[in-house]
Image (cartoon, rainbow, N blue to C red; front, side, top):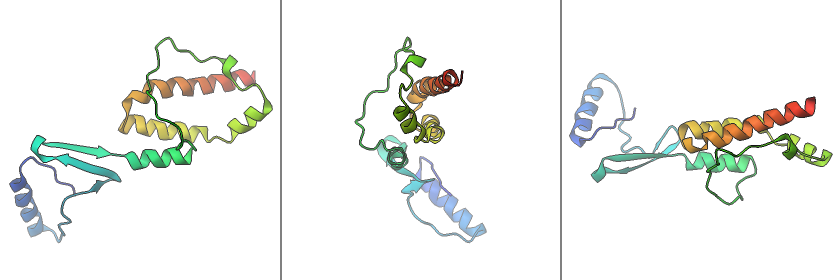
Length: 138
């Protein structure tokens, strides 16, 4: 159980009440919650959760750990077209090795839980991939 309140004395009172009803251990201050690292600034009453390790593992899984970070803004007029599809069998073979659905799913988790700014970019790129495969099938 994770208890978060502004006043430390409230935590102690709640713990005392819970100990009367349940057999429990006090594990102290939480360092991680649901695999997210906790940071806090008690004077400002702020709590931050970080999933940096998840993102790093995801980047390694999809062979993107060595890429340089960049801003993720994407202009509203930006469009992808079927002309940008692969042009050779080598490129097709290389692309078929990418676990595309898993990569998009992992990015969707990041969007929902960590960086909502990525939503537009992932939506644009994933729809392009679907359109490109439909063009190749025709």
